[in-house]
Image 1 (spheres, one colour):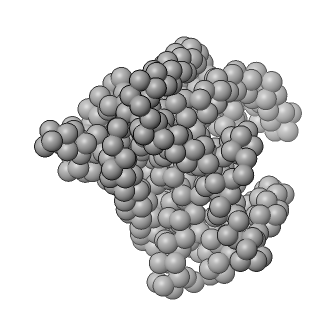
Image 2 (cartoon, rainbow, N blue to C red; image 1 turned 30 degrees about the vertical axis):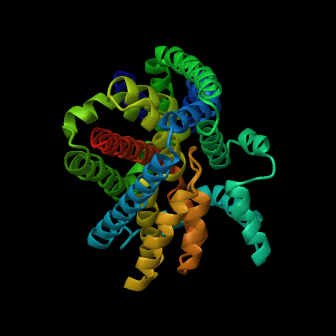
Length: 423
């Protein structure tokens, strides 16, 4: 937390103390040559362990359940939670934008300046969207098959596509439940050892976390500059406010009602997860820390944590669903595009389903947002207006995403304990 606050303060001071083009070059050099490498060592240590940890956790979780009916029951509850909470998040975002109208009266000169500054980045994202279009029904069917069951799962893993690996781990764990006890136990013990070794590496990474978090936050604040933040202040404050409502109002209600947990004690223990999520902007990079803290400090059983949390890091994107709705309506208001109620309901539905497909890496939601914008007649290149502050907002929505995963795991853990007690 100290590293987080210090990074914000020092990054802001760097913008004030080093004005002008020469000062900006000095700040950029410090961010790129000093802070960036230190932060990346921390990030990459976490990414190192994601693949083996996720595979081991899901395999052990499913095999440890023993009964495939329990896997189906947990899976159904988990997916229901994901869909409902993402819908609630999207409704929250759309409501706040309609209520406060942050894009109305936006200065046309500021809009033109932002479009000129970040239009190139928007064009790159649009190029990615265009390259992934599937013009035929057969191509669309193959695209969805590749999302879940690619021909080469190792190729998918190399490209950090988590969903195929999760499907393979679920199948592998399910297959282990059908093997003789002796063989299943020996394989489960091997994967448990692998998982524990990966968590130990996470411990190494957390030793440098305070310094790395300082460097990551400093780089972000120093790069986007206070002048850009001032121009988009209302939008940034509104999105951040929605994130806070999600974390400190909606999640505590779910914890109290569904998981029967003390909300603020639970969130206090989850602070390391939130700080890691905020500084890395990646659900996947945060996953090792999420599993470690959930099992050690929040008392969630490994079988549940190993099943729910990797699924959540891939599919449960509450913060992303909220952000997408806000962004689409914000850009629509800036360009004077009126979206009727039925169009906003379509945006809500699209936000939920596109959030499921968003990559758990920094900026992973942006290509999908452009698709949603095009569907309702909002200029997709208008995303350039917000690209300058997106990393800051990405940090916030990652916190919302991962805490939603942990809340879901707490509910599933309680439900499974109750089912075990009932026999």
